[in-house]
Image (tube, rainbow, N blue to C red; front, side):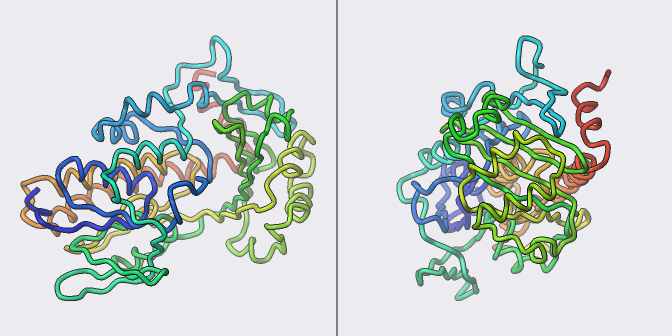
Length: 383
């Protein structure tokens, strides 16, 4: 670890990517702190379950020595998918004896974060640390946080997600709009609150498709579900729509108009959701992005290569970034951090570009007139 010997490393962002990087670096004797904006580790983790892939997310956990913990916490069967039409007719079903031999083990975000947090040395994560700005002082990087605290480091890694505040210090390149907007909602105690959808979900996932729209539903281990309604739209649609995303009636009215003709089973989701919905316009980084490597700042995950979620690669890419960045920083072939970072970023960009191209194709396919047919064909290539 010649490149980072005696260096203080600051990771900004305590998601799966940042925590995986911290774990692997600490295993090898590096001095690491993680700065996370959440107030504490008990804050509820939002979002759907995560399916980890053998060549990326699971590979990173293996190197991190955390597969036993993962196997004790993942949810068998949560990867089982039902593809349905807008009337809730099942077109493809992975439940049952011949439900497919896919290996996409699912784990809720909360348990995955707990596994990673528990693997770190005490006080590695500094909570309530929302990044504001940085500047170089006396050969160090000074980090300023919203709560008035500061920190100093020799190396800063941006793991702060889609709206990264550190990325602009590395490159001015911005993402482009991918043509789809999503509204996210959550239903607690779905068995009681949305019984018909809960039964159809059967502890797994639903992809409902029709009219160039998608409705994706995922079960969670705490008895709740999350859902994502996706539509093709202009980039300014969310601002122009007039929807009050904190008012359930406003969002439900939008859904009934936008998804006209869809079966009333889906009404359960919007009628019984938590009152605050999250609008998510989908963006993607340019596939040909490049920049000059810096000696003391780099990035991983969505901060580096934001893309839509329709190929399930986001968390896997972030965790693989973490693994590869750690390996480069720990590789004694690199005399300094700039060389290690440059080699990592070159590999990362090439890999991300290929994945993003595939993701954009999938996003367009799912939101096309033949979206349902295309998805079923993907699972049944021989017809």
